[in-house]
Image (cartoon, rainbow, N blue to C red; front, side, top):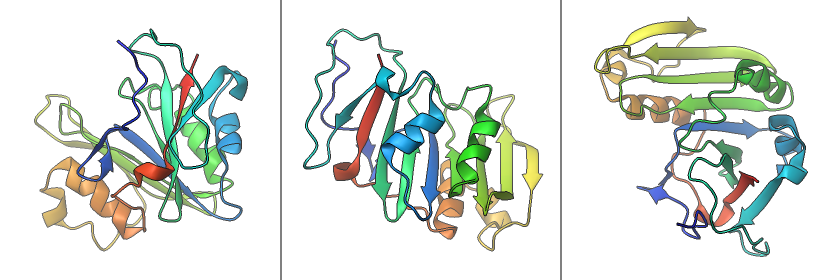
Length: 195
């Protein structure tokens, strides 16, 4: 089965991905800058499968394994979005914390993890290279919530009522409070894969 899919998975306006990193600032990030910061070996090991008008489609071999590492990137309402694959390759990186700090040294950063099969979620916000807000909630028994990281002053939207909602609603409500868009524009998305 081919992994080449011209219709990126947008469900209810949201790219169907588990982990997102959003960057904002001047100069605006470019794919090359971000990929160089994110991945080693260098970008030559990645191949773009762009959807944006004006980008030529690059052929991708047909029989790639289902677990092939990839990310989606794209401009979304003034933010540069990076979205992980469903194997959580980016989120599971052992240097993820350092990676976020490197990105945050150059741009404002908001990252979030949506709930998957449990009640866990997380978000972190950096401004001026400093971590100003972070909350991580684990779900060791799949139906519970245990706060494992609570850093910085909660935003006005972070109310008791919000924290009784589904984790998906929580992370996207907090994201919206700092200006991160929940609805994603398919026309700006590009996918980079490990080959």
